[in-house]
Image (cartoon, rainbow, N blue to C red; front, side, top):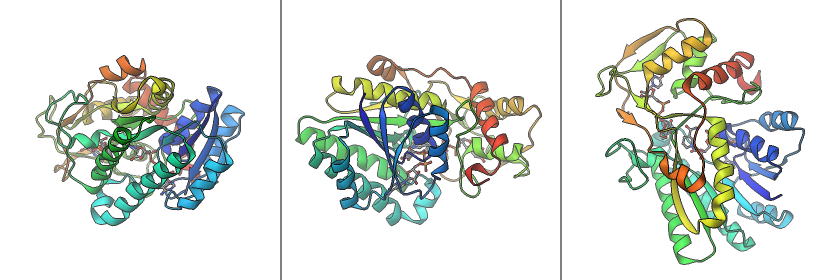
Length: 338
Ligand code: NAD
Ligand code: UFG
């Protein structure tokens, strides 16, 4: 049994990963400032697993507070989810994004180094590929970003690589997530976006519960098979399990290694709309609207490195992603605050 520190563990992907860690027998310490989440997610994780989470309300910008966490617990490894993630907001508040994501990560790395804990799994993103040079995307594809959020991911990847080059003993996995959707099969934990969702799946589901009138499909003139944007949607439970696989293999992977976590399947907006409509049991209303600024035609993973290095691949299909997301949304139309 290991003790894992999970930063941002109250959030969407974090809470699902905490659940899998507890079920696998790990001890879990969570730090989160609840900036974009609710501690209710962790209470539900505890109820689902029958195990306890050691929760600390802490901002990663509080360097001294982080040191205390490492003094209080013998942490074996860290999974670092904490960060701000809204692309549009990052273009309006770049300093907040750079400070929170990059300074927060620097503090974490400093605290880890001081404590002699050198195993880290970091939440990177397919956003580091920018407008992809080709699909499917392999980890060797060119890295470039078009917004401050993406830039923070790229900088943090670089910081981790430099650190692992400069000092021996680090095992850092930079997991590049594609498009996480879905929810735990219990319907008790899931994604709880604040305000109007930017992302496709939460928006569709809010149409399904009657909070939004119709889905805007941003463009039907992309160079894709049906003209709508193509992405690699991955079930959040698959993603969570990818973190356990990464932790298990980290000892064999010295340095800093970037790995895509996706399914390898390109799914269009219309494909997703069809699957969501089937899960909900009726045709959900939509209309075509102009392209969204900054969008790209297609982005999906070559998922073979994760299979080769971690022995992990995704299992859930789009129908299951929609069914599980719908179960959560239907039971919790107002997220955790309901
Ligand atoms: P989320 O917002 O639900 O979770 C992030 C958590 O971090 C939240 O609970 C938030 O309160 C916490 N947090 C933020 N700044 C903090 C700070 N300074 N100190 C302490 N806690 C802080 O987001 P998520 O969807 O679960 O994403 C988790 C990670 O995965 C993020 O780093 C995100 O950038 C990355 N990611 C997400 C997606 C996606 O589409 N959801 C895709 C690729 C990568
Ligand atoms: N879309 C719509 N209508 C909507 C929302 C989205 O048509 O209301 C379309 C988009 O145009 C795109 C697809 O659905 O074609 C997916 O859009 P999302 O906003 O759900 O996801 P993105 O791929 O644009 O971005 C996501 C995260 C980013 C991350 C990126 C790569 O939001 O943070 O994946 O990992 F950087």
